Image 1 (spheres, rainbow, N blue to C red):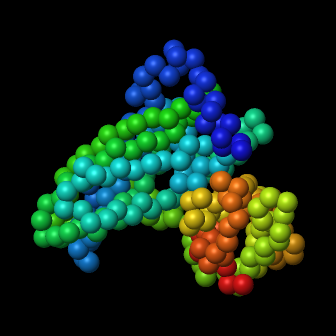
Image 2: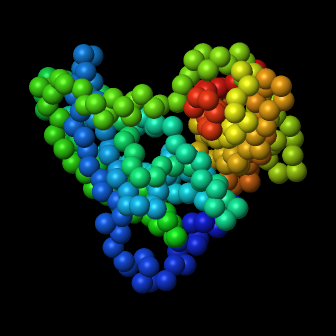
Length: 265
């Protein structure tokens, strides 16, 4: 509901605000990167933001705008996987959003149709940018990727080093998900047994099913167990089943950012 209100507020902005150009707020470029030993290509989308502005992570929170990627202009490209460096959590006006400020480098793992030939990477990307107002913004990017590019880009390599860690790296011993019936939707309680953290941890829970809405969890510690409690609803208020193996849990604000895929129980 909060996300719906945030999006509706964009539509109600004065015409002068929506008509103003915000191209000077964000600069977008593709870093062409390098051809890897397995034939894939590592490139990156590099976004630089003006002071005080931020943009959003793949799951932006109720107050954010999710990024959308359209790579239909690409040539000799089979698939593109966006890698997401650990984001920050922002709280403003009683709402939470998740994203990046100043700049962000999003590594792109590109599987090519023919790795011995040049490739063109061309995309139209819709992002949200936010300062005093939050607005949708479109950027267009293009670059050529050559098989002769073999030297790794240190900027992309640094971004790869900031990806969230896996459970084994953080000493996670178990991840269990408990479902309870609710008046509407389901209650979801995630228990992560791991070394005690900073006490400032926040969690984001995502589902593979795009029709499911998972609210902002309440996150707390009980001994060495990090607990995240939230509600799950279908966007159309339909009866639904929740595949616990398809849940993705991200832990931010702790000693290590953590990326967990699925529950073990």
